Image (cartoon, rainbow, N blue to C red; front, side, top):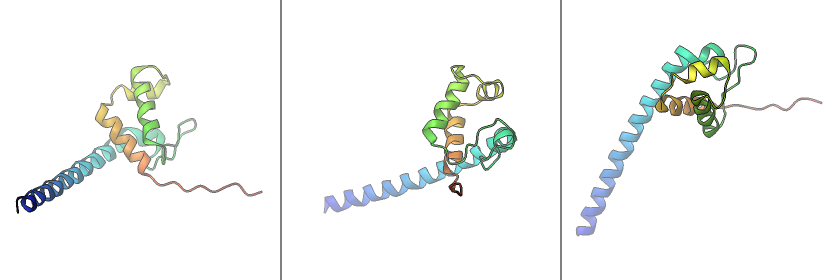
Length: 114
């Protein structure tokens, strides 16, 4: 009988943890959307498709790559006039949220016709 009570407690805790994680993720999406709309979309588009020449397309890019590059811009180990300024304003949470946002955008690829 004690094992059943323990199992019920574990299931209850797991359910609560899952609910808390989903709530946190929802907040992260909202934070990312706000940051994208106020800063990123000017060059990279809200959908991650660059809207100005020379800006990178970010949609579908790997999260780890985006985090690494944003941190490099922020630290100054990678330099580009606009990104070096913008990245200095980003917190670690901002970088994670933005990387999640752009990595989650689905991209389809079409090969060139011969």
